[in-house]
Length: 281
Image (cartoon, rainbow, N blue to C red; front, side, top):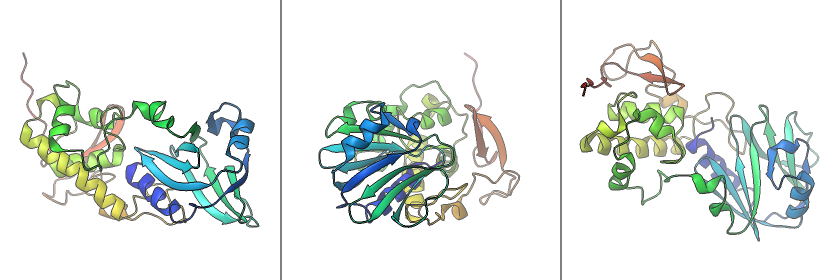
């Protein structure tokens, strides 16, 4: 948390707040947030004087595009951005502040301190870690059913870990994998390569529709997520399976079960998502 819908919501919010602002200086109070360059003072110096042009997203990463630079930022579990007037008191756990020439500030707050920032010259970020390792964007028009079927291939891994693997498809975290698998009627322990074409078509549609619905609702505020203006997402009120252990399934009334798949807590309906019978070879 946050996952693709939350990061997309933050991107959209920041895009209404910070383009056109020029960085006067940068304050870094927690050096380990800055991953590239490895010297936070150099990071701050390189950003000085640059103007923000737009904010884009790649998977769960924000790409803050400037004139000649790109800052790649991962919010991890509880990272937040917010824009404030410079005279407003700085909240606890605020680790990086971008001071703008117009008297406002972009502040990065992270209670868990797991977030990261990488700075690149324009054109270098997509060819370098961490972005170069990422798979397909599920909300891009070219993420077709045919492409999805090809990605799944003959993988002999359970479908949930495959969907969580950012090298295949990006941004679908634990919440939305559970939701998409439920919509598609597929058990999370089903072997990816054993799913037939009809199932993969349903799953592709479920992934896209789940993520689009979540983006439209501003994401899910499961723990402490808020967007760049401090507003909560609302998709948690529409969750059909995630977080509903021992509650009746909305489709059939069976109590929802929770297990662990690939090391992640996993919710499913044993009736709507039956586990296929495995044939011994």
